[in-house]
Amino acid sequence: MSDSKPPIIIVAGGLATRMRPITEEIPKCLVDINGKPLIQHQIEYFRAHGFTDIIFCVAHLADKVKDYFKDGTDFGVRVRYVQETKELMGTAGSVKLCEGFIDDENFMVYYGDNLTNMDFDQFIKFHKDHHAMGTVCMRPHKDGYKSSSIITLDEKNVIKIFLEKPSLEDIEKYQYVQKYINSGIYMFNKKIFDFIPQNQKYDFAKEVFPELLKINSAFYGYVTTEYFREIGRIEKYELFLKEVAGKDEIFMPNKAVFLDRDGVINYNIHGLIRPEQLQLIEGSAEAIKKLNDAKYAVIVVTNQPELSKGFLTFKDIDEIHTKMYTIVESEGGHIDALYMCPHHPHRGFPGEISELKIDCNCRKPKPGLILRAAQENNIDLSQSWMIGDSPSDLLAAQSAGVRAILVGSGSGSGRKEEIDFFHKVRDYVVKNDLLDAVKYILKEKQ
Ligand SMILES: [Mg+2]
Ligand SMILES: [Zn+2]
Image (cartoon, rainbow, N blue to C red; front, top):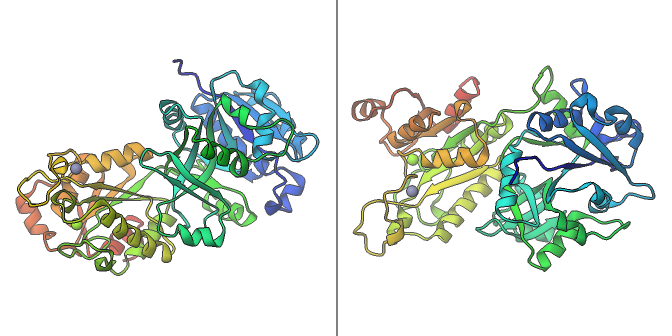
């Protein structure tokens, strides 16, 4: 297999009514961001990562795009165009026009109002490794209640439900289900063209994807919490301009704050096995929202050895976590991901699950959970933090190479003198609770 990069079809033909009046003069992909068109920032990122074959689907104000990028030479890429002539063809209908340009086995579709510095190589590798017909790039349960799409996956990342613009009933129905949001970035095998009729208005989300689900095609979700912005509405555009004001580099670094669960987010009670028992520590949800706003990925890393002892099931723990997500979301924040170690090395508990009774690599103080989360989410550990209430959190952080904060809100094993006496932790900061720790990271007054 060659390491050549697939072509990228940029869908940029929409009328962009939600961006008027700006888009009466220029198409949405050309709106200015710090002196350059939006899509130029993205194309420069593509080129820096070896993607040089760009095909624009243009319609509304097509000549503005053509006049700007021409054949791409000035931008170090090859640019070709397909133009919808009669009417707006929809996302899939316009991509169908590119069929004759695609020689590769696979290609990418990219909606022209997106900005991301995600690791596209990992996305493509996932698509190829799964021999997928289609792979949708998606983000976890942000904006819980009022999301623009609802996608659910099985444990192998096969897409089970795909609802674009879900109804209120659907939003209600899937309220407590782990769900994802479409990012408008797809990888396809070129056989996908067989699913799109010629010269007809046709949409990926409304028509192609339901068909793939119906026939059980290899249709996957690639989940990432990497930096992503969609500049689809005038308010979002204005917010984004504020966010990047004065910055040369408009993309956000992929940094995270890793949080221990018990004693950090929620009160550490012995034998927490039912959602009713879960109570968030005051300020936790507010702290998580602050991290969201400051563009840190919020990733929970937690040891749950009770699973191996058979004290609670994976279903029980899912319900506990769904309650935690729901409380955080009701205060406007979100948890991007959760990584859990269900193992424990010591045998001898009645009802224990023997395959979980192992000496694993993920149980803190080992760094396995943090390292896996970083690898799967393209996190730069040198810009990241771990907040915990016990020595094992600090040691895991140290081994993973992230800075650590010890909070005093936990069970009492978190006293500094004790830790310094018994454990070899090099360097860490002590704060009262999660909110104080987050304010410290964000350099806010505590
Ligand atoms: Mg803890
Ligand atoms: Zn483990």
